[in-house]
Image (cartoon, rainbow, N blue to C red; front, side):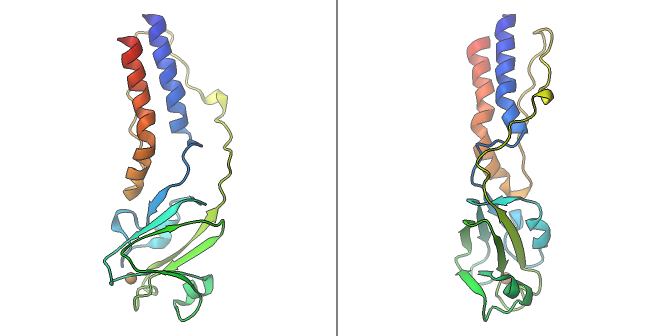
Length: 189
Ligand SMILES: [Cu+2]
């Protein structure tokens, strides 16, 4: 019984640790621009853009009321001037635009509805290359195993992410979280 329990607990730790540190298995992410507010007036997109680290392969999702707003990917000069008569790289008008970040470079976005860019509907992000390899977590930080088998392993903590991107994170994490429960049922019972 006790050895079974230790096995279960060790499995739980082994599976949980990659969740606590950022898992290298997590690849592309979707980022809802403005989180649950979407792409609209009255939001501080500079603040939003500084919350995340964007890497090649991630996707920005702009959600907005059709015809009220739009998404222009522009040069830095046009981002600063809000004058989209030049320096426009791409135009997106669907109301639910998905823009994949394919290059390790700076991306600049504005809304070209009159007054919206100057009013704050603009941001820039620095997209970095995917490293391909993430260093393993330092082994010294592994929490110690309990000396006896009498205490129950804690339930896996729900993994949360700020704002509207929580769902995307949840999808990627769900199977990790199920594994300890399944192991526990199989081995302990
Ligand atoms: Cu707008």
